[in-house]
Length: 223
Image 1 (cartoon, rainbow, N blue to C red):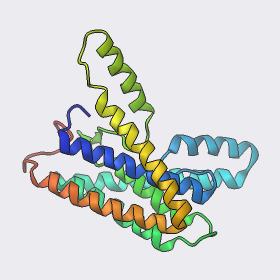
Image 2 (cartoon, rainbow, N blue to C red; image 1 turned 180 degrees about the vertical axis):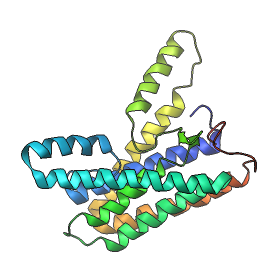
Image 3 (tube, rainbow, N blue to C red; image 1 turned 45 degrees about the vertical axis):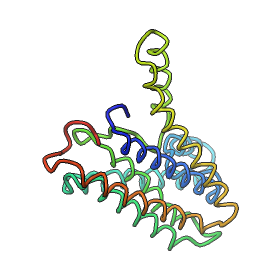
Image 4 (cartoon, rainbow, N blue to C red; image 1 turned 135 degrees about the vertical axis):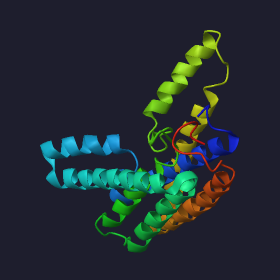
C-alpha cells in the first residue's frame, strides 16, 4: 500500500469495501458460504468431505469460480497495458451484473458463482510484475502487515506506515456491515447495489489509468 499514491490507496480501500459487501451478501444469501473469502470455503470443502458432500460441492464450485476470475482477469490485464485497472474492473462489473440478473430468491447458489468470479478478478487490479500487489478480498496478510508496521513504529521506524493497511481492513469490515444491511433490506437487490458500486469504481480506475505513463507495464509501483 505504501507504494500507491493517495487516489490508488482510496481505490484499494473502496475495492476492499466492495469485497466485504459482496461477501456479506453471499454469506447471508447462501447460508454460510463465501464469495471472496476462499480460505473459509476451503475449510468448508474439507469439513464437507468429512460430513456433508453437498456442502463440499458448493464450496468447491465457489473456489473454482474465484480461481477462474483470477485467471481471466490476469489474461485481460496482460493485453490491456496501462488500461488494466479499468479493464479488470469492467470485467468485475459485468460478472456482478450477470450474477444479479441470474439470481432468484431461494434458488441454488449458481448466480453467486459469477459473484465469486468477480471477486477473484478484483484481486488483479493492482499488480507488480504480473503478480498480485495488494490483496483486496482477503485480510490475513493485511493484518500481519499491520502488526509488523506497528512493531516498526514502536522500534523507532516509520510511525504511520500501518495506517494504509488498517484502512484496507476497515474497508472490508465496513463493506461487510453495509452488505448485511443491504441484504436484510433488499435481499437479492443487494447484488445490483454491488454492481453499481463496481461501475463507479471502474470509472475511478479509468481516471487513474489516464494519468499513468503509456510506458507503464507490470514492473514498478502497482499504481
